[in-house]
Length: 408
Image 1 (cartoon, rainbow, N blue to C red):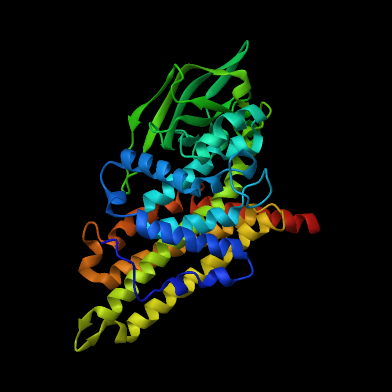
Image 2: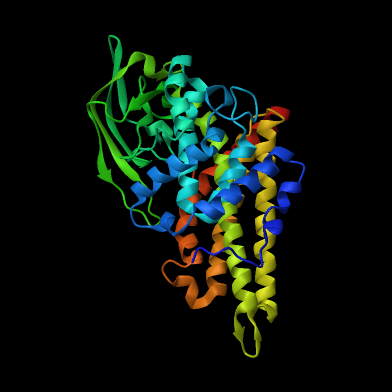
């Protein structure tokens, strides 16, 4: 079931890496990652024990050197980009390759970056030295704890609180939908240190690094979803956090979270590309081999039209994805709008491409364990996490209107 799709060759899959948005180093990275993934990612990545699979993936990705791309070079990362910066194009290339082979591989890789990204952006040198090398080597599993039962897209509604008591902060509250919940060695947790929410409430949010074994922290409430991966609800009850574990200044947590998402939101689009390209490959394989009414499925004009739509959607998403990554890496510009466009287009298109692949595969497409059935479950969450599609539309419109009003 995990076979590569022969008609959709490696040359076709990586043709977009010949575009000017990427460098020779990224093309070499894609080839190396593909070779590793083809040999290392097998059926065990689709088993029932997601915790064990993710632990193994993090360890093996660390040993293979892939996790170095999730951490700035100065702290056991890679030489790509500046010493204190992440190279978003490298992250996108790796997510696209890993997602093509196994959704859990993509998940394990990106959570090391998303979970530690706030430390890279705003942590003290001591915090960076303590956590980032272990993340890069696969010796510590990271997690990002922002969402709450009543605060998902509306971050200003965040209710978890942190109060200062001498040389520590004390956290109380609930976080939910936390990827790597119950598995992580540490969490970057966002809590309210002042204010009561609403539009002004975002200025009262701060970020902290909380070790998983901290007293007063429970991650025992696991959440099962349609594409299994470690996820849990976290509860904080008088949880003490050393004062030096504050990231940046008090009240700077919201801006920090958005800066982190500006990096990794673009990479969500790359993961969607990986899923979509795998679905297109499976659909092409089925179309040329399936015989019906005296010809192959590929001979029907309706099939050809559907395949053309799928391929066009994939390339359009790829253009927006690597434009956003290039804009941040090379132009050094804010990519709030570009990242939102990339995520919106790529995830919505991937959903349509995967659905079309299921349809073209017919009965096989809904057989449990078939690649397109697995993709159908895996791709759905991408339109929700790190900002739902509806939120991305609001972000794009806000940025457009901000520019238009500024010129008026």
